[in-house]
Image 1 (cartoon, one colour):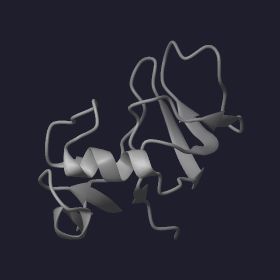
Image 2 (image 1 turned 90 degrees about the horizontal axis):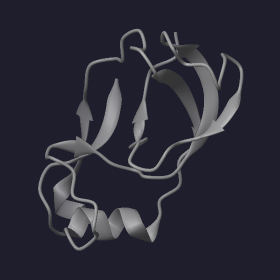
Image 3 (image 1 turned 30 degrees about the vertical axis):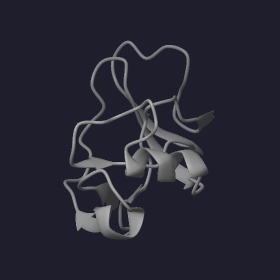
Length: 102
């Protein structure tokens, strides 16, 4: 699975890398697997990459803090959504990744 990952805080053209990461597994309790259909490049993402935004994920980390998509699967105890629902991604859910379609 391909993702844009922040490897260090600094200038985005040097600190953002396309990497291969493991595919997500079955959602755990209270989680959902989302097919992201919209994940914009936002100025907050660039500030995060530079290390000047209040959110500072542990590195390396996929980034991309906004998005929307369709629920593919839910874990146990997920009661407010179901597969097929369209959702906004919660704050702190980093979305710049892509699972190949086969």
